[in-house]
Image (tube, rainbow, N blue to C red; front, side):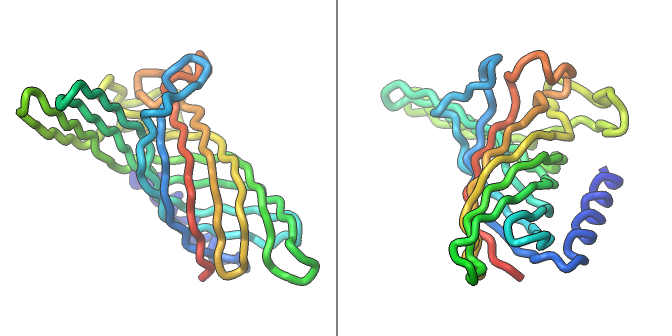
Length: 227
């Protein structure tokens, strides 16, 4: 875990030490987990959570760029069941540090202005660092709340095995593909992003390509401010 954290920090320092345009971003995530073999989600299971981090663009040209950085981001899903005044509400909210690498296509809004519309796409890798799972229920007027920390396996990412795998543990590492776009106003950047997880989230699920069930899907809306 320390080795992975060091690699991520070195990647961040390499990013911000160039002549890149660096900005901080923060925003809202709507997180979900696929529930069918073909990768569909249930609309009532979207979990509101957050994203915050630092990103840099390398200024390759007026119409094309590359960006990367580190994002502290929430994933997961929720489930609710109600019957009259009785209910069960569960939230599953693991937290990750994510390293994206996006290709960015920019469409200038004028010939001289720095403002532009942009579209981005690219892969990401992420490492699980924490999170909570909570359950609230009410039955016949009796209420209860339980909370537990989310556990990750002790995987070595350089091997094909899932070291420390267990049914009550998530995979330490997630990876996938980001797709999105937004507006760059020069002093403010608005963006929307959809993250398609490609790894099955439970550490005992070793065949990620068997189907698209139990994979993260995360819609993010964020605001970026240049440094």
